[in-house]
Amino acid sequence: MIGKTRLSLILVGAVALAVGVYWTQAQNTPKPPAGQTQAQGGSGAGGNRGGNVNRPPVPVTVDTVEKGPMALRVDAVGTAQPVASVSLKTRVDAQIETIHVADGAIVRAGDKLVKLDSRQIEAQIKQTEANIAKDMAAVEQAERDVARLTDLLNRGSGTQLNVDNARTQLAGARAVLAADQALLENQKVQLSWYTLTAPISGRVGTFNAKAGNIVRAGDNSATGIIATIVQTSPIYVAFSIPQTALPQVREALQSGQGEVRATPQGGQRSATGRISVIDNTIDGATGTIMIRALFENTDDILWPGQLCNVRVTLRSEPDTVSIPRTATQSGQRGNFVYVVENGVARMRPVKVGRFQDGRDVIVEGLQGGETVVSDGALLLTDGARVEIRKGGQQG
Image (cartoon, rainbow, N blue to C red; front, top):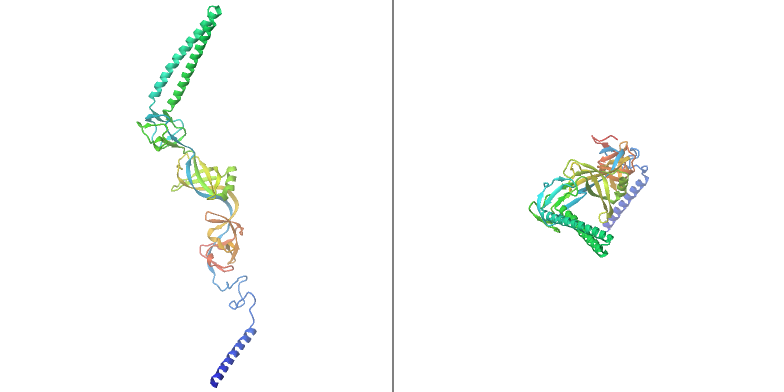
């Protein structure tokens, strides 16, 4: 028992002695200068941090920061809309006699489209014209009576009563004549309803009723519409933009700029127009506002109801700094890029204004001409050495 106790005391003493020796050596060992580590051995490239000297260069692709003119554009999806659309309806109950144009034809304002059976109203007009002729004869007779009785009165052979009665009959005959003349004008107006003409220039759709069908006035159903004409030249393209772009759009409209290019989806040709109308209200649910651009569309590139890719060029900015979108990185403190200087990547914070055509427009942080990392930035740290990949630009 006593032997075991002595052995335990000897082991405790040995451990204490070893700890004391280690502590003494640690206190007497010189510390490396600030900014160096044991691994660096007190040497390294000036300004490199965190042991980047011993790390192999990171292969990256670089690009040059561009500075120059760039158009301020807004892209959207719009819908072609006719400036005017008119539905042809009859104002009288009648049978279609003739349709003068084919389905889908281009028509001009005033062109004759449909002729209805007008024999009944034409007969009524002839009857009214006959009544007018009789009324005119009655007026002439009354005028002669007034003249004769007035002459007799002046000679002392007639009475004032007879003259007054004749004048009353003349006034009545003239009133009947005026009423029949007004009736004739009304009937002629009604006669015009039997010939349907194009109120606007445009393209007519499919005729829902053909020759021989009876159409009725006041029919508000789909069958009551004989055909529809839409104006295709000029034509609107309506699209929505974010409300943040509204000041630039208004400025472009006032200055006569605001060129709009619309390309039908699935098509290769584009039409060029101008901003024409800005809606009077911003949609509170989406934060957008409706814009309408006007296109001449003389070659029918745009078709009513067609979806279009719209690009609005508001103005050209002369000194715009831009970089590839892949060069912009995001961190806890915001956006930044890696600028390559003497083979070393330096982190630089930037402020992005907008994204356009695959590039970020930089408003703060870059001046133009710098070399930035466009691919491989995820493997970089501030101060890391880089190796330009084959095909990349040399910094």
